[in-house]
Image (cartoon, rainbow, N blue to C red):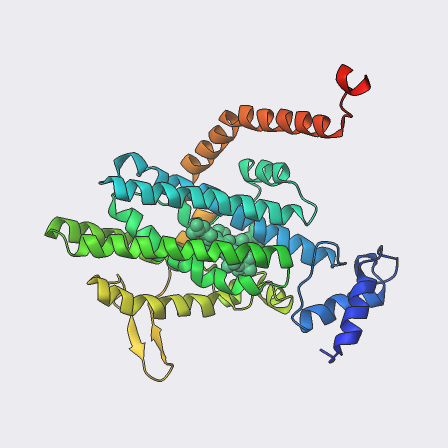
Length: 348
Ligand code: 3HC
């Protein structure tokens, strides 16, 4: 990409905020597209009022919607254990974590709204099965140790994937990710600490922790998406700096982080082909079952149906809350914009 000066970038970016005119792609004139490209090349943030290619907008909505949906569907597997947490401390931690996930969903739906798509529209698409959420949440939480494995592995994978998104080229998404990553970091630590406690417990507790890690390890590796040569969006997303690293790069980073942590926990990762490759400076690992991944994406995972049914039910049962909030907003707005009737005392 041709080098541009800071002045050219600022000037072109300013031009990019005017109404799109006929001519280039998406009805843009050349200056608008050049301004967009220059801003991305200069690592500037694209903001909601800036001109952007339609395909960039659509890809962001696609990814951010998938991400937001993952956060709110992701509340279900762990919420399942709130009433059965083994102590008040664990219960308080788990409730805070599940509430954080709801908050992450809200930040992300709000960030997606800046691209001109409403939360209602995105939720309708989720409920109709027309938009995705992460494959990982279609697996069941069978024991209390699963709460630890989700924190350590699932939230750990999420952080590995999401820290680079703090540098995403789209401003509102990047800013939402900063806070999300801080909270995900706490989630990962609580999972690790939970597994550490189980690992130091009775043999039955250690077995429960190992069983949970055995079941969550491979699905966690699938969270990073298909291999690079099968990833439909990675190349373009990286050109646009929505994504900064490919799926396989991040997956490898995650494996390298987890191996020493598993050793510290005294747990084994369920992969006989996992070993340190001196030459590559990374761990090699076994083949992922991509057939299982595709089946889960098609809706055939162990809990797909249960998760969507529960989500739709929660949405219906929450209708009165949305109605009440909307009625309050109308009332509040009316009160703010009505001139108060003068009292007798004031007019005397
Ligand atoms: N689960 C479900 N769908 C997946 C997937 C997964 N693990 N991995 C990929 N896909 C989907 C993609 O969404 C895409 O579907 P689409 O064409 O219908 O949109 C298709 O498979 C092809 O994959 P690509 O690699 O081409 O897609 P992307 O370039 O978008 O990369 C991604 C996939 C790495 C997941 C990327 O979308 C991403 O980084 N998303 C943001 C992070 C995110 O979504 N995280 C969810 C994880 S869970 C979470 O955050 C909750 C936390 O509390 C743990």
